[in-house]
Image (tube, rainbow, N blue to C red; front, side, top):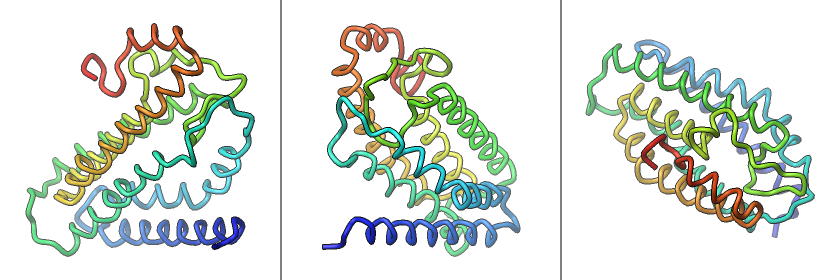
Length: 221
């Protein structure tokens, strides 16, 4: 069995290969598609900001409760991979199965901008409590300001908007299927895991908060 240091090195190597592939797909679709810049900028952001994200995620290890091995997070990753990679590949090599127009690409850019704004707002609001892990720390505070006034999981809403944006931008059946049947169920399960932890950590405070807000879509769910 691979030791942890070697496993981490292998995962980092795979991650950077995926980053390079994402940048290439953005470059390959630069002619005739306005969504290319998003893939290129995302690749650059993860390429240069990845080490910082890893350090900040591992910084706090004093926990009250944590899900076992973060398995719910790993369920989300396949959906993202399909959306980010299958969509531009389909755009390059497949026939035009969905309409392709500048209007759709502009709509995609609007959705992608919304997703970045919402995710950044949620990330800034959480501050030091942000983590890639589903967890409740010893000094955790139940955040109810910013986007959390309206929905309990704005970062996941941003992920979903991003998936829809890329799908529309690349007119991709694969992206649509991945968003609906892989990403969405994974996010719903992840939300379930997190809310169990939050209820265990905050009890009635979280129950009252959950009665005033929706999980993912304001006024709906």
